[in-house]
Length: 119
Image (cartoon, rainbow, N blue to C red):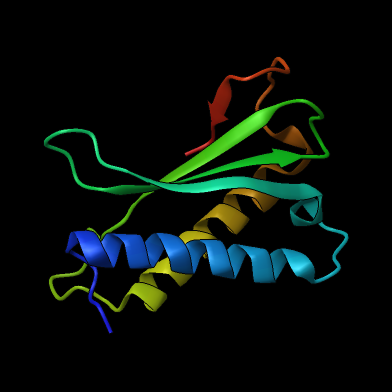
């Protein structure tokens, strides 16, 4: 089991986030989370910066708009790197909380290619 911190581990976190998102969205629900559709889960690492997991999604609440959620691929609050599965669960929970908190008030947007970041 890779611990978060290495490049391999960051990719493990990205894959685990994608798996958890797909699984959680398969369950029928009536809350704002039910309107979410995941477009892409990607790993980004600007030069000199720590890797981040970026989740690009759409919501039936704002047709035609694209939203993004970004979180560090490493747990910034942990001295000992957690297993990839544990950190991925935290990322997915953060996204779900953000979407449910925003609900029908996801940021105003103009339909198109631009991503509207909520975190």
